[in-house]
Image 1 (cartoon, helix red, strand yellow):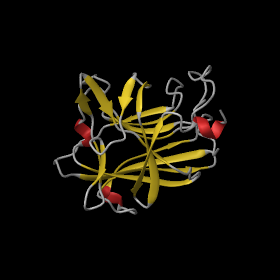
Image 2: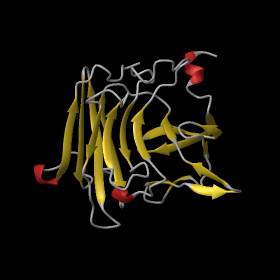
Image 3: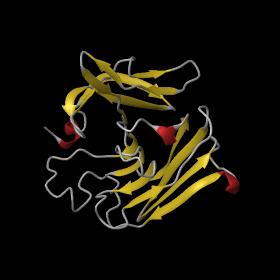
Length: 205
């Protein structure tokens, strides 16, 4: 199997058009993290009439199925902006919403000491710890001091609009979260800013 073929081994054949890009969805399992099962069906991934993406976790025949979508073509350096609707500050303690870069590898032997998978994450969730802050920016490996940055984050309505972004440039990852869906928010809409210049930042491969 070639390296390019490896990237799609866990994915189905459904093509999803969303946000001006083409995507594929993970299907089957159990796959990591957490030995999850995944589904590419519209029960779990759908686009509504307003063009909004809905991701749904659901139990079928005693097993929980998760959604995961991946861009068909890697984009490399640039601005990545994710726009959310709702209380992403109060996700069920059993769930994590991850917005991330990732590259499958043939070997993960040193994943705890260097960024083997070319990974960078914006993550919502508490990992079942009620005292944990609900938003974090993470350059892997998270165990390296300074690579994980947790953020206090609280919204006030079920219809809350927020945006979360990273600007990936050589040697630097600039993260921001803000209220609303404007691509260039006013300063008073910014919820948090964090910059990483970690030696573990993803490589544009």
